[in-house]
Image (tube, rainbow, N blue to C red; front, side, top):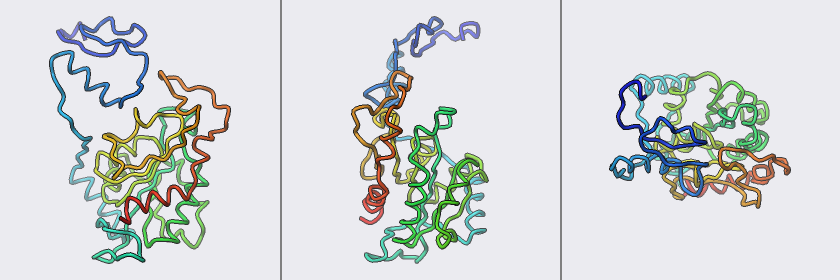
Length: 269
């Protein structure tokens, strides 16, 4: 950047790597506030006060049309719902609500990605319970590794599940999430895509602090984070993950019923 003639170079000085910066803030890790606010604070070093803004993601007409084509192929009416509880009221257009679900996420952690994920068996049980309780269509999004989730879903329910894992690009997945009533997933990229698209979300957090890496801005009326306040959680601090001696208890102890209650809170009110 110095060789490029950039006069103002602002950033974080992590492990004394900020020698090329003209203004910097020493950093050992992200704690106690959201990572978005950390980056916004850098602007104050050059006398810019950031205005409070939500995350936003804009989809091109091309990707919106791609989602429409996928919905037509699977005979899905993708309009948004008012409620999904058949005992309380019906959708005005009588079309089934759509829940986009991702059982993966956290790929940036490499081989340790599984540590951030709610167990797939519980995801499958949740899908079975959702379909038993509500008239819905569940769309599985994500990478190819998530396709086997369908194997754990009861045979009688599989016709209500559209498995697109590994079949769409990130942008196409975003367009599909954009047409959903609710996104359910782990701490990962697609969660933040859903938040930026103004979708309601339910997410599972274990080793990572949702105050730092969770939906932004936090809004419990739209985004419910399910986690267990164990004495060892969060264990990811200062960009380091502590060895887990409790076999992911922070995620395993989140029950399917808690997720069902969260769905009711967001979509049945």
